[in-house]
Image (cartoon, rainbow, N blue to C red; front, side):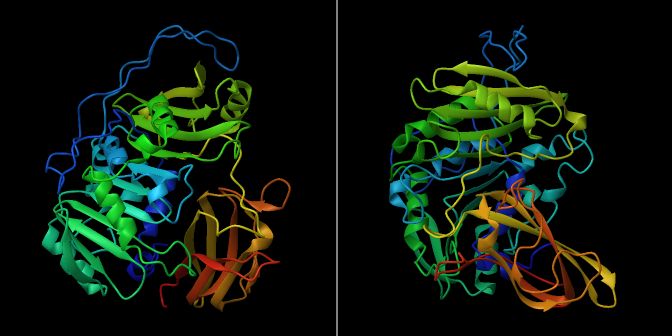
Length: 456
């Protein structure tokens, strides 16, 4: 079931977070530049550059040598992502070691609609919640990063989008570096320019921090007036260079060893071509501590490679796993970060960064089953996740018919929620449900996601 426009806007554009299954990659990384008051109109190029899969011979997990290099892959609009992401130290909602980020090039992907398998582009058919923007599939690029920041690049008219923001209670402010700022009576903030929309929302129900400085930092990075992520954290640049160009991206850097032992960052990318689609995952490690065997174990278990047989390659501190699959066989982009999930301590630290998806199916008589699925992000202890709200109902065969701790699937130990875990909840058609993070021994809580029924 699709979320309402109201609930999407309240969480700062969380629909894009739900697109995290459509992970992609980034090539042609650039930084620096001369500060300007506004980006030039043609700055988000859809072509140019590219990346090569050099012919260095390495072995697959089974020991078979790589015979020949793969063809060069062209650059995509996702390459512009690094120009928007500011130095993590400039943001109060991320750690200085980095943050997770997503990049997708829907319009370019649409050019391969006839070549891709059935349903591959289904997630881009809906309209963006703010009137005037159009559908997701019409956008040149969709970026999401730093927990609550979204950037859309398209052909939409600035005036139409500004009118759309006003419909949802945003008031126009001053012009800043060529962008018009908008804000409502809560922490959210937005900035608009022709073909460019930046939004930032609260990262939890407890977050009351004004997001205007966050949006300013993003605009400053884009116009060359602030340090960028890839310059402040060189490991981010190195990681993305390892993944190469692609149409879809999911990547991050983090503190040492939070995933793989001595790992510093991971990512997965998909580059689509008429005949073959390349899937490449990469992990970056500290000097002298490259963990090739751990990467091989992950590559052998994940469904990120769409049934292809990945080939491993080590290049300095980076380990990559690459597979090519027939484009006609691609019906989804599962993505995923290589390595173990980053698990948040239930009793300390802030709320987890996680996306939940919702799907309601009526069973008749005004009731139905609501499936809530962990769509990606942090691993969260089961005991810290609660389903709350109104409109619960007795429905046969579901996991849960009332508020309380998550009663659905978990990891193999039964202790934590990871990507793909789901719970079925019995609800009436006018339900209003929230997924809430509340450590059992803590006095804090945060709403992670909300959804409402068709009759709410």
